Amino acid sequence: MNQILLDRFPFRLGTTSYIIPDDILPNVRFLAEKVRDVELVLFDVDTFCNIPTTEQIAELNAITARHDLSFTVHLPLDLKFSGEMEKMDESILKAKRVIKSCLPLSPRAFVLHLDSHAIPMEPSEAETATWIRNCVRSLHQLLPCLPDPALLAVENLESYPPSLNHAVLDQVPVSECIDVGHLWLQGINAPDYLAERIERTRVIHLHGIGTRDHQSLALMPYTQVKAVIDQLITLNYRGVVTLEVFSEGDFVRSQEVLGKIA
Image (cartoon, rainbow, N blue to C red; front, side, top):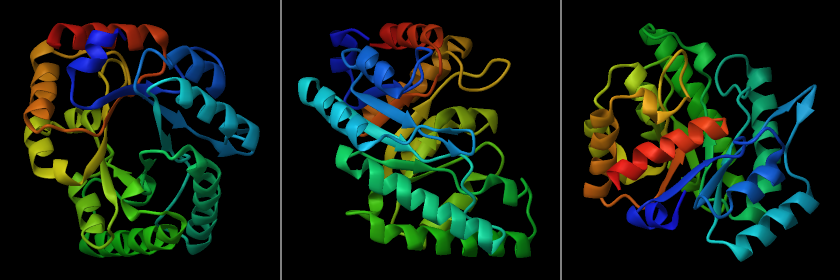
């Protein structure tokens, strides 16, 4: 991402820690002069854990000291903040471990998914009430780990209406991560949604939709992408915009689309 493109927008333009087929540190080194922010996509499952060690945190901080670079942290995808109490408590403990490990990076946000598997697209009133209550409980237990509750950013998913997130956010002083690709999948007008929710938003995820989501922006109509970027400029959004793709090809092609807008 050339300097002109990075300087063109009021927001911090970034991408994920899985652009080249390697671990987090090589990716951050590769991206250090190409972006303003790297989303550290973290996993902690039986067969794989990439939560940074103390030594890796030190190296990541050394890289930021040499570059205009920041981090956002995406908490593991298997966290369940609603449903069975045992699973909720396990997820809270795992989330706390990740937050504690990554706080020395001074991340701009910890992005998380609420439990999408525990709620259908059209839930009943009882299902909605239970899901919201459990999510609120879980988030409140995470807040003491953070110097600022707004560092926790709840992401909208394509599998249930964003309004359910809003009902949770009405009760917990956390922030929002707006995933524009997920809005597109649901047929929601992204510029209008951004105008309504931008004040509480710390991170925006941007990606195209092809055979799946999280692909190049070049797969989307140019006017649709431009409308989102133009709205962010109009709103003077100064948070993070993450090109949430996972290959060098998709990253480069997405850059090219933004280069036309810039």
